[in-house]
Length: 193
Image (cartoon, rainbow, N blue to C red; front, side, top):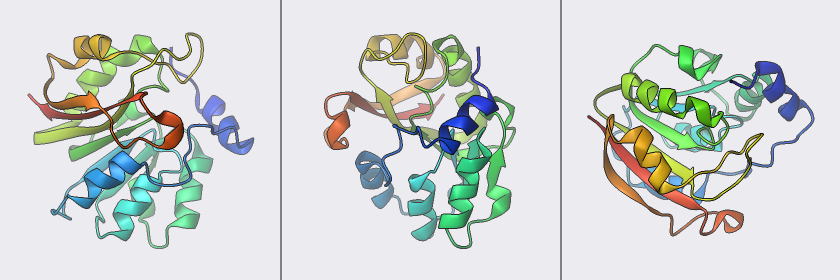
């Protein structure tokens, strides 16, 4: 089960984007601020309005790609971020992306896909990363919804998906979550095996 382009486009058209913080997520900003290699090729899957892509791009990371099923989300980035390369805004399904990246940022995408796709997600992430590639971001550590996004989960469950594809360098309770996500997020830095 994969939620359709129409489903996500409707969310943006009707402004039902409760996951959208309207700014870069504090834990990701903290991580970005310590990155020194501006040449990194970075992917943000299911990026939506992607304030993370905007923040990175405006701080000299020009090799940032966003993939999303919703055209409106990508248009919002294009209209908001002057000079963002249109070729790096990919309208389509994450599972169809066939490039290689140094770093992939997880920010509310994992919880948006149906749990049946989580094993496939972990494998695809591994395949999209080049040698020494990293998957970095946030996963919800909370019971959320069973029949629609966001889908929650737990660290114990997540280990079953990622353990065979990644070395779990950092996998810990997030100390600097956005206020309405306090004590609900895990910060992860997974290294491709």
